[in-house]
Length: 168
Image (cartoon, helix red, strand yellow):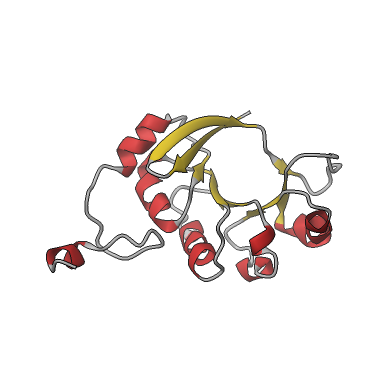
């Protein structure tokens, strides 16, 4: 079971989640949501979607996001891997999923995910987190709400501090 924190509206909720990445050589279960690597998704994903299965894709930092464009509105979730906490490519991928591709499903952060990243991840469009540091939902909420102002625009559409100062 995976310790999962979901961001719902304005609250962080702790849950357990049994969904794991289906290895490229593993047998496909007969029911349930599938979480596939991008390679396995290319091989089997469209057929599973056509069969009405809930399908998610795990993207590694070097994977081609555009490969998902024809399917993005049919995916249940996209899990973005953080191989190291300092590898920020998944932030950009999350923003592109939300803004350019119009993805409305779950974007899950997996890998070396730490609560100090909570605020920025939420701002970029993540709404589910598998924390590597064992942090609780309350700790994630505290980290995400630590600062009131933001200084640049992001996928969350919050006005930056300079816009607030101008009264707009």
